[in-house]
Amino acid sequence: MSDLQELSAADYEKLGLFYLGRPWNLEANQPLPGPLLYDSRDLLTHALCVGMTGSGKTGLCIGLIEEAAIDGVPALVIDPKGDLGNLMLTFPDLVPADFLPWVEEEAAARQGTSRQELAAREARKWRDGLASWGEGPERIRRLREAAEVTIYTPGSTAGRPLAVLASLAPPPPVVRDDEELLRERVGTTAASLLGLLGIDADPVRSREHILLSNLLQQAWSAGTALSLANLVQQVQQPPIAKVGVLDLDTFYPEKERFALAMALNNLLASPGFATWMEGEPLDVDRLLYTPEGKPRVAICSIGHLS
Image (tube, rainbow, N blue to C red; front, side, top):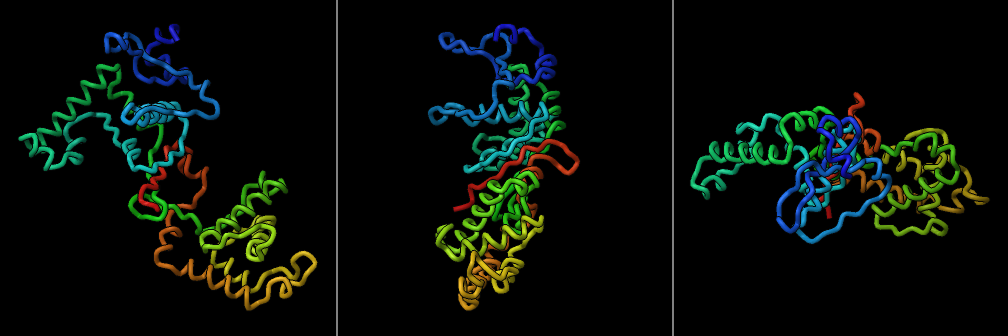
């Protein structure tokens, strides 16, 4: 690490090194000279960040995400607490007007000042604080230009909604061409759909699971997308004559299939379920990159969900 300490900001930006702050002298309780850098090549697969409440876990992870974004690395962030939206609060100019919308009248009143003056204080505090750690407006601007930050809110229109089930699109060719991977995807999707209906289905014994799996397998093997509406229709009138060696009506009589179709239709018609059908498709590639190919920090905020 000592060799890295001598690098300038321009150097470590070029080399893909993450700036995490400065080394800290525990005895003197003050920072040491030089940046604390992390070689992003060491962050290969999994990592675990642990610490006491208030020890700075979230701050460290936000720093890693920002450093990755500056280097053009996208991120998919699951936010169960609702505090990672702070990644959007980047103000390159660090002027009072940037902070003013986030200053509450009550907070200013408690400090015996106006919102405008409190915003000016916050702007000075952040400008001086960042400068003391070797950070300036130019790095904030670089971060803003390098990646787009978007907040997705599945099941809600508070942020950008995600259409979790608007389309049961076929998996990519690399999955469709692998029999085992396709079978796994089909089984997981069928189980998930039945789970929404409150049906805990055994993949081997459940007629519901076997029927949905056959319908998904046939469509996806042909590269065809399904919607829930299509699926309701196909449950009533399946495009298959046999399941295994049994004819369809012996395996799963039409009257009983109608009950499953009704359950799926009720899910589709439920006003509370409508928000799960709106917004952008739940597609990881589209979450990680904009249509223009710009890296994205996609924050999936789920704190509002049960």
